[in-house]
Length: 364
Image (cartoon, rainbow, N blue to C red; front, side, top):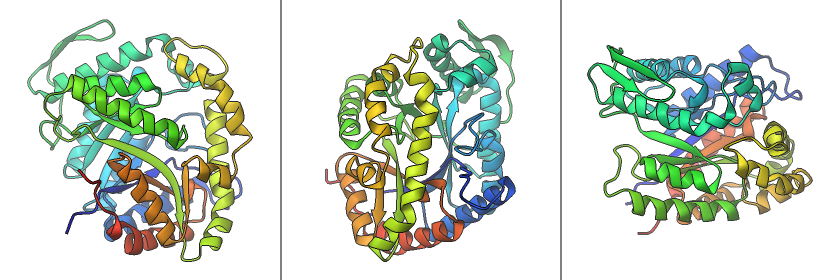
């Protein structure tokens, strides 16, 4: 029998105002959910990095949280992503990543990107116009570190010689590498760099389908051999809630899904309405943003392929359709981070029992 494709979880560590919980409760409940996911056979869990986004994301120190998750799990892979490389020193990223790989027994996936928050760039003192050059140079530093030996690098942004950087990661030659991809051009860059592409919940499915095809074409153009751990893979985040009763699923998920995607649009608004060097695509999306802002309700989100809500058969069919259309790895935001933990846990158990085992790999 064919092995079902890997299915991961995705967390922002949200704290919506309509849920009666504080930050400590949020963190403990999320760790409990990851421990359950580990027992249920989910493949991995991903945690983002955001700053200064109250309610939407309280994940400003993901390596600390993932270190705690490593101690609560045994098999679950830990996705450290997206790390905004432009405002992190790559040596510190390398040290933290290697430490996390060690304490987890070699279970880390590493995802990087440019970030999209003007406030984060301003606060950390980095010009947004340098986002692409800093990201690629930081990645070059990381790859030099992975190669072993004293670390030397002489670039535009980083210069050092003969550094003995420790510790070293468990995985060889390195943890799997992934890059956040939003603009069509970013899929070209991910393929050229030879890393997997991480697709966030920013765009409707008909646009992502085109991005997938573009990524595959670019991969064939730039890569002759697959990169260990990435293999030209494409992973996509989708909000999901599964319940035995389809109508009950919709009633319980409506507020959570609409809150999450409404807040996502609010967080991206600053970059959509002012032109920043290197972020021209976001500016071009501004008209669509205004349309989406008036369409943030469950029915429209489902129609755009951004959420999956329903009974096990409905969820299985929708997830299988994504796999068949080119998604290699599903990142499920169960309850969109805006539902009570007991409902999230029940949905995890239902997905593991009745959906995941029935998913099939994409036909060759």
